[in-house]
Image (tube, rainbow over all chains, first blue to last red; front, side, top):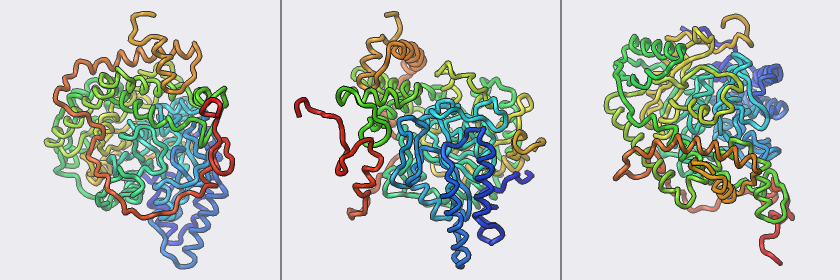
Length: 492
Length: 100
């Protein structure tokens, strides 16, 4: 069984605050102090100490008055900077939104606050969530807490690095093609992307609307389960949020997994070269076998088209969504000779190179003469990928795969080659395109790299219970503790 | 122009559609990068999609209707607070029509 993490997580913090063993203000002060001490990670874009401490004091006062506290009492939260927090800078790590303060809270934020959580900071990210290394931030890259010369992954790199460094008990990220799971893998934290529609995206600044989903990053599985239960559910302000019952995800973490059929993509695995990723996968497979699962070999015959389909569909949707950043209603305006040149100059100065590249690709894929050949073709191949999973889930209850093809790569290693960077998402894209719940579970440190490694668990739509059940079993048998030696000393 | 999939003139055309001002260096860099990406996605050409419908959403979206009840919205002051320019009543924008 695992040693406890050096910094208390969601469940332990909430229970201690509810029981009066700890004051929310003290908890928040400790996390703020750690955030300041670890400014070198560049994980945060905005730390609002006064606001956080005052929110924490309000929680303590409510307890003092004898009021019952919520499921996240005093739990410090870090928000990715594409989630709106009323009156607090929300930039998507872009110059075009520098200084923007939204006039409302995201639905996720409202739900967290209603359960007495305390938002402490906004996290750095790839600009508009476009990237796999957090090197596309207009405010500088984030460093990986396990090795400061390496990337934290992306696009939720700041959220992942903060969680690994013990800043916040949970960070929210967003996941369009792997943007919580891949940084979760690079930083050794549990990262959940729920089913498309499981929770509301009201107040999440849109990147690709048929794929975007808010996800959680925590230091253990049970913590993620508790937060997911708070976030899940229908919101009338987001027509894509599903009217589905919200089960007790936390209870699922204790349920036995024996008899579950776990599908393994044997052919895809053979193409993974990294020894640590291969070893982590074999260990995870064996531990599920030991826990009584049946391992079955499966195939997703069209999964290898995931990168192509994703980079056509997501960029097309992004080119449309990002049209709203035109310098008229919010953010940067660079005045030109007329309206058109004002648009063009504002967007030229406001967007970074990767965002421009994706807007260009998406505009091209949607433009007259290419729409059917690129955009519609990609959406049809996506149908084949959805059908692949439907067939696979006739033979298994969950799919086990690597999350990323390598452990964290070095900062600067892939910035010169956009296509090579896109291939970092090869395992996370298929579940996203099929709308399925998928999560990263760390299982240990690689022997060759010394860096965190883990696996991805994917299950059918709205079966997060089963996904968490398997994740908790993997975690319990791994003995992994999230304690980067560079920050916490020793071997963890 | 070389034998790539996309020409510099096409890049400029797409940039105009996307409302992005690009300099010559950016045009050339994007031409090469878009070429490489379009070359990669050309693998989709070989996939037979006869009789398949596109998946605009991967799972069915019910889009339930909410009750037709008025709810409070943003005040004008808050809605305009983040505007680069405003006259206190609306967003101030550059002239749209000639001679207006």
